[in-house]
Image (cartoon, rainbow, N blue to C red):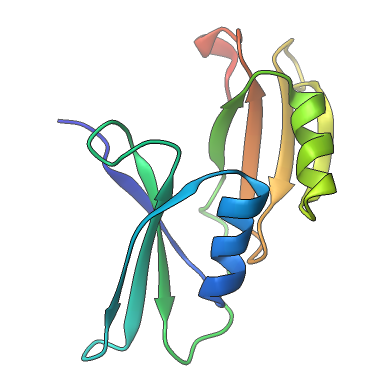
Length: 134
């Protein structure tokens, strides 16, 4: 078995795609409209789906907002330098909600950004021991 993708429901697909591709640097891997179901799926990632897990962005037509709920935590991305990544994301119009620094009760350098729908994306500086990752 292997992990294929994580699905996030988004209120505005073009806005979400702009964030994940232009701000976070992912590629749009595929996009498909489903007129009978009134939804569109778009898959984004840093590598092809055969080579790693990706994000599925689901846009249900006519729904422009979702409540995130209390069960969702975050999607984590490894970055070489968390401070530099925050600066680059901010310069591309992204929202940094927790600046880079050591995680609480640990030494792992992390930061958080937020996508246009309010989903949190954790940036974890490379070289972090896996046992410390939140």
